[in-house]
Image (spheres, helix red, strand yellow):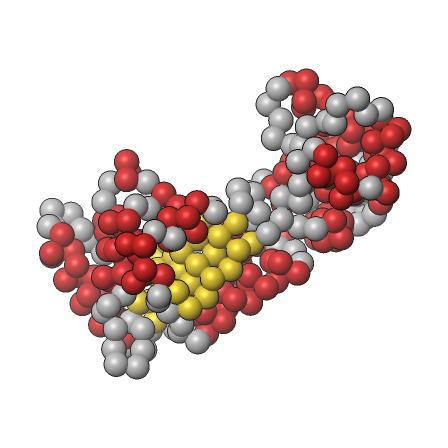
Length: 300
């Protein structure tokens, strides 16, 4: 809709997890290094957590694109018990036949598969996304699967990705054997103000546009209302470009972003930070620039 107006060859703020747009800011770069290290060194369990919208899935997509042919990755995203037995989804992830097979037979088929891949010099990695939906029994099942190891190598490596509730689940004393096998544990935090600005500029430039479409105050405003969550940053920036396009402008300033927030709050479906009460537009603009930490603490 607005791509030609801003000189873009594609939408820079799509909500789809496209690894081409991955911005390696401080927190995301560290998370990626930890994931890559876990794969390269064949560590035990790897756990990556983060709030909804922090970019966990984008990191996973980037990781999947970066592995070589010696690593076979299976991805499971249907983790809720209502979707059926976890073992069937695991076998489906590696294209193994589970039809009309009981639990013992499924386990044996998967064991034979791991041994066969190991004999051919191929490592097997299981990534479980949305792992906060797993129960204790499912986690114990994963632990039992990881027992299928050679003397010096892991035949199966496990990466769990989920929301903060996963950390609460793993804090259960009954799962201490599982937790003891976690070698890498990283919590993905929201972007800070500086990284939010760099993130927005990076995505604009990646899409072929001017990285300075948003002025500095607009970027600070985006960070405040989106809380530094990449998914909300994308949504707010996308709508801001629509508003600027509708006004035939080639830049985005504080008023543009504020107008988006004001409209969304009135609609009642906003997940952005709410507008502070008894705060004029002019004073809010000043405080976002000069007193961001105080403003956040007052309206947390």
